Each structure stands twice: as structure tokens, then as C-alpha cells.
Image (cartoon, rainbow, N blue to C red; front, top):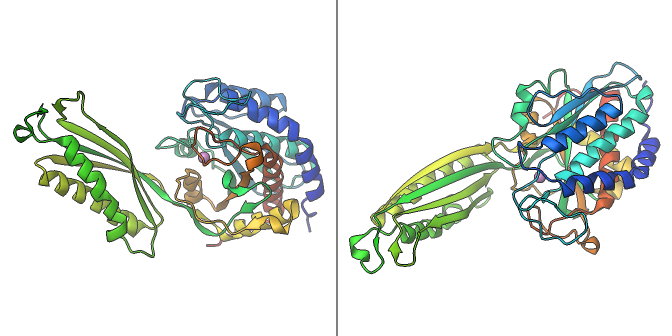
Amino acid sequence: MPLAAPDREIRDRALALQKTLVDWRRRLHMNPELSFEERETTAFLEETLRGWGLEPVRRTPTGLWADLEGGGGSGPTVAVRADIDALPIHEANAFEFRSRRDGVMHACGHDGHTAILLGVTRTLLDLRDRLPGRVRLVFQPAEELLPGGARPMIEAGVLDGVDRIIGLHLWSLLPTGRAGIAPGPLMANADAFEIRVRGRGGHGAQPHLAADALAAAAQVVVSLQQVVSRMVDPMRAAVVTVGVFRAGSAFNVIAPEALLQGTVRTFDADVRARVREALSRVAGDVAHAFGCEAETDYREGYPALVNERGTVEVFRAAVAAQMGEAALVEPEPFMGGEDFAYYLLERPGAFLFLGARNPEVGAEYPHHHPNFTIDEAALPWGVAVLAATAWRLLEAPLAREG
Ligand code: NI
């Protein structure tokens, strides 16, 4: 029998890293980079990992992975993934380590994920002699921008030789000290659409000689609110959000064209197909009623993220050992998209929500808000739970379950 995971040593090391984790996180927070543009971040990671004697593998323009070979047996390979990109949001926080780049911000916590994975690396390196297998540390670019960075990493071979994969998201809906994980769907199919409404421009004083694309598009937005409320089974979840409405160029000119952009979130393939069909039908027919035409372009985004039961059980055991039994909560599935889902289509694994909400330190805004921040006290918990989960998966390989 292999030795049980050295929970105590993992926790002590993770907690001792607190200040270093905060330094890494703040450094990343001050220097955010957009999806697929994470050059400085990647360089920093490469340098840090090399400094620790690891050999980073770079096969995509940004992002990298590195293998940590344990000396404690020839167990399987477990990948641990962090996403490293920021968002095109102008930070509204006033703290000293706020973004130094106008219009770019770590507003989802990926700075924390990156710091946590460095902490996992450092922790497992310290315990390397006993580590019963190989851990692949995956720093993935571009989670925030379709088609996402996971697929190019997979195409580049990040999962070659990997038996299982785990990851987490710092979570503003859960208080620090809590962790949520469950088998089955955790995050949604996240699709994007664009609707172009075309009419006929004209003088603002002569509406009868024009076809007002702006007014028609406004009706399209209103009508789309009925897709979910009137066309989807009320027991099944769906969201349709229009996030962009662009039309017009002058106050006295009838807009010849309007552009709508939005997103559709669902968990089931049939609900997804139904909403997709309804969207273009409603847009087309409503625009037509006002003498305009609508063209709908629908792009399927990240698939739903579905956790595998076996890995979830291991995650739960690690959370209980590291944070205490009371830390575990049943997470509400979230309608956000997450490209970690692509790894789970290829390998068994699971994804955890780690509580990072704490109003006392200003960590009370939703993800993607200009005032978003995380409670940095959550960082060591992330390190401890990921390291302890990876260790358990190495010492007691699982058969794949549903
Ligand atoms: Ni995120």
C-alpha cells in the first residue's frame, strides 16, 4: 500500500506560501494581458519554472506546461490546469496593485489561478521525493475568448500521457473557506450570436420613406425575451442575453442597419438546439414585420463542463482533509462557460469552485465586474486542495466513472 497523501505537510507548505502567493498574484494583477496575448505572463512563468529546475514546454504562442516527475513511484500522470488571461475591462478598484494597463484587467481571478498553480508546483517540488507519479502543470492561455486556449493546447499535446485532469475557479459566490464540487454538469454550453438587422436609411423626418433598422432591432431585443420564457421547458435552464446593440450615426438620420450581439447559455443539447432555432426565427420574422431583414450568425462556444464522479470524490476527500469537512458545499451549477470542459471531453477529471468572497476585503463583486477582486486568503486553500487531490489521484488510480 502506498503511503497516504501527506496532508499535513501539504497544508503547512501551502499556508507558508501565503505571502509569496499574494506577491505573485499582485504582480500578475498589475500586468494583465488579454487572451492569446499573454506574452509577459508566459515569460514570467517560464523563467520561474526554469529557476526551479523544471523544463517548460511551449508549443503555443502563449501558455506552457511542465512535468514534475515524482520520485515516489511510477503512478499515473495527473494534469493540473490554470488559466492565465485577463479581460478587456477597465479596472475601477483603487488599491495599490490595480491594473497598470488601461482597459485590461484580471476581473475573473485568473491571476489567482496562476499564482495557485505556481504554489502547487512549489509545494509538490518540495515533496517530490515521495510524489507517487507525474504531475503536469498546465498554464493555459485565453480562457476568456472563443474559441479558447484549451483546444490549441490539446492539439499541441498537453494531454498526451495524461490520465486525469483537475482544475479550479476562485468563486465570488462562495465565501472564503468553502469549496463546491459535484458530479455532472457544473457549467453551461456558452454560445455567441450576432444579428444584423438591415433596413433602408433615410431622413429622420420621413420615416415613411425608410425602413428603420434601429426600431426593428429594438423589437427584436424585446421579442427575444420570450424565447426562454415561452419556448423552453420551464424545468430546463436557458439564458438569452443581448449584450451589444449598435445602430445609427446621427440624431436626424434613420439607421439603415443595426447590430445585436449576445450569448445563449444552456446545459442540454436539445435545449441548445431549440433556442438556436428560435433565435433566428424570431429575429427574422420580427424584422420582417417592420420591413427589414435580419440575418443571424450563431457560434457554438464552450461545451457544458461535466464533472466525473470518481475525481469528484477524490476532490471532496482532499477538501475535507485540507479545509475541514464543513468547507464542502453543493455548488449551484453556473451558466458561465469554461473551456476546461474541452479537457473533460478527452480525459476524466473534475473542476472545483473555491470560495474567495469576503466583503471585508472588498471581494464581493461578481466576476467580470470592474470592481471584482478576490480574497487573497483563498490562495493557500487552492494550493492545498489541488496538491492534495493530485497526490491522491497518483497514489490510488481510479477507473473511469460517469
Ligand atoms: Ni474565469
